[in-house]
Image (cartoon, rainbow, N blue to C red):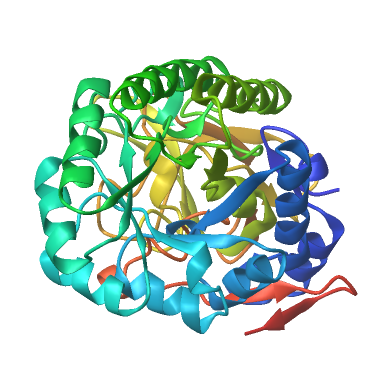
Length: 405
């Protein structure tokens, strides 16, 4: 039995991933592509009639895009580069939208040239640029949310108030664009159903006000925020999102928005980490387990890994990943600060709240499996900060082992 930091991996590490990790002799990130497909299919069953547009930034790998496209998913692209990748991976252009409200004139023109006809917006200045560089395009306005209840709130950079949303959509109509929809984002790794309920209330208010102005949208984009299941918070407490409640609130919300709208209304959702996080795991190794007294006089253990913030674990500022030590079973443990290999002080969990129980007998070179690390591991990594290369990726084979791509 492997030693696990905090708890047993349980359903968070399925047989295909476990077999691929056990077979790996070098550091890599392993994805269970079939698991990602199954998570997509489950989402469609939970939210019938809601179209899935995968948030590409969470895992911009061609194989993932192609697999999801075959299941009927589209892509939420943040710029022309992601549009081009989605098209190469086989996503139909009609199922790709430009979901970023931040874009230059050139970005807009390039995306329009590639066939994109639906764009997110949140300002009259952006609308004016769209009218010039994507004439006749469909636009959906992002309504800001507080982000309360999410690990990452996303409440400042994107979105506008309900008042501004009405104004933006009126400008879009007057500029010859199609005011086609509204959108929200309740924050990344959203942990409450209440956030979705509040977002629906705001969307309903905007729908009513648009209807009084003769603007009839045809869709609502529910954005991202659906949580992964295998994380721990910064203090090591398991994050246990009420996924069933979240799905129920979303289903009730779509019914309510259709009632308010009084006519046909389509829905789109943009999951990222929800689809990929729990179906990716990193095989890394121990650099060193040390013990030393710091400038504050406190004696601490430090577990340095071959993988950290800059080559696969960027989100260690907001959460803890579960660690499995496959060559250790039982025995004493110590509570250690987990850190990456670089010469950068940000490459570590918080000293005060991030201590993790790890086997006391760990030695340099021992393998470690980092669970639920499939989201953002490939996209947030540096190209070689401090000389530490990005992780290669492979695919778990449902027959056992892994397949390098």
